[in-house]
Image (cartoon, rainbow, N blue to C red; front, side, top):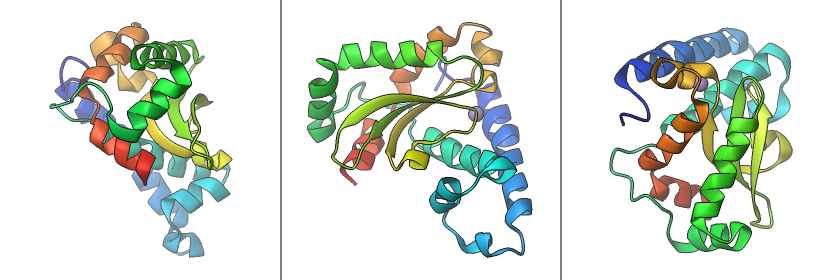
Length: 179
Ligand code: MN
């Protein structure tokens, strides 16, 4: 998935940062009724340290499972039509998405979301924020925490975000949209 995400970054991001959120979350829910709750429910219903760690586990699950080294480069089917309807063109959508992620101050995430009527939107949330908090379906997410890109791109966040388009698995995103 280089140059968008290097092996070193995956090692730290997936192997250390995500692992810490998973360990923290497991410790926080151990021996409580929350142990049996789905991650999505936990994120929707929690706050404080529990929300921060559950949110980051859910966010990173969605993040890491949306990549492929064999990206087709663009969506097709119903998702492609919905993006065209909302932003005029896929190119314009990509530009607006990167602009939103670049403008987000500090740490957080930029999302493509679907509301219950099927309408798409670009949203940004600080820190561990996730669209399920607002009853929106998360489709695509770019992590703009510095740990996601600093080893490879240093301060050049926009350049990293643009590089991610080369490794998006649009079949995964399309299934989230249709599902
Ligand atoms: Mn991250």
